Image (cartoon, rainbow, N blue to C red; front, side, top):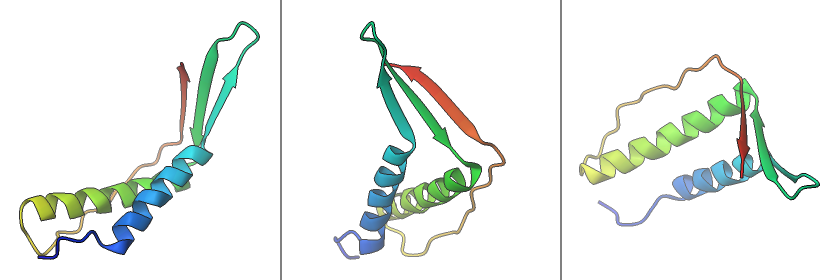
Length: 86
């Protein structure tokens, strides 16, 4: 087995980082309190979760020293909006 991480995994990780940053909006109110709003569409969430599933499958099969992967699919019908205070 190759010890190198495939280019598509590195590209997928970078895409997850970029798309995750696009969906987060951080603000500071007049009292200095920071807040973050994270809003993502169902379509984008589905694509990101499929990418994350692909990465976790790659890692799990590498850790188990397996060559073939069993394909699974991600399904979600939800639109998420997450609010957090920093």
